[in-house]
Amino acid sequence: MSEKALLEVKDLSVEYHTDEMTVKAVNGVSLSVGRGQTLGLVGETGAGKTTLALSLLRLLPKGIGKITSGAINFEGANLLSLREADMRAYRGRLLSMIFQDPMTSLNPVIPVGRQVAEVLELHNDKKLTKQQIEARVDDMFRMVGIPPERKNEYPHQFSGGMKQRVVIAISLACEPELLIADEPTTALDVTIQAQVLAMMTDLKEKLGTSMIMITHDLGIVAETCDSVAVMYAGEIVEMGTVEALFEGDTHHPYTEGLFGSIPRLDVETERLRPIDGMIADPSDLPGGCSFHPRCPYCTERCKTEHPQAHLDARGHMIRCHRFDKEGEA
Image (cartoon, rainbow, N blue to C red; front, side, top):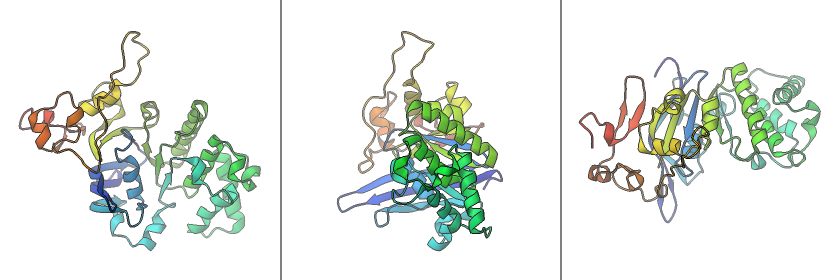
């Protein structure tokens, strides 16, 4: 494990099992997140981003979701080898998650301040008194821009943006070392999105928190992330720095398609270039490269042989036959 890596995921695979089918949601994912760094995780709906995030905290639905292989190393400890009781000590305190929908992330019958205090009580390693916990709750509300006087109110008394701020306060209450933000601005209007993102960036700098930012919005990635991992059909097909990808150093056909669909203000006549077809069905993945039915560069080899990941001297990763060392497909 790299000295700078806080989190390192190796060959992680996750499946969902039902009576009718097996869904291969994550397939051999490997990535790392350095201390104080932000990794952007992008891709279409159904690519496996949320499943990957839930796997890191071992929050997959019981009886349905199963991690079938791989390792999740956090500060040198393999989280998959921990007992559930030990894993609870990691959640909230060392690893925390902002879930997609702030409307359903809060308990509607408990005051919001009590929900923040509950996290501090469950992970009270510093032996805080009740008075100290209440003071910490007030500090967290101020930090996310909510007057502490509102801590005794209920979720229905808050707007969508304010609910998201409360969720962020809960996630950061114990000052976790890694924060996973699963589309934290999806349910918010554009103005509130900008405020929440600015606040998250400010808090990240103050607390030195590492982050995994899951989003469909490449503009958010450009503003907040240091590196980007592009997911398709449960795999990371390309990974590199934000500067490289946004300056046009994209190589995988899927990444080219994602960035080609971004509107450009400097070219009046250029039309958007959509990606043809639909994302691969994870319960019935195509043979060979999962992207080959939609790929403009598809060859016969792509239909039968699964591409390996290739890493260049800069650490830029590409999973495509066009970059095989043995020669182009």
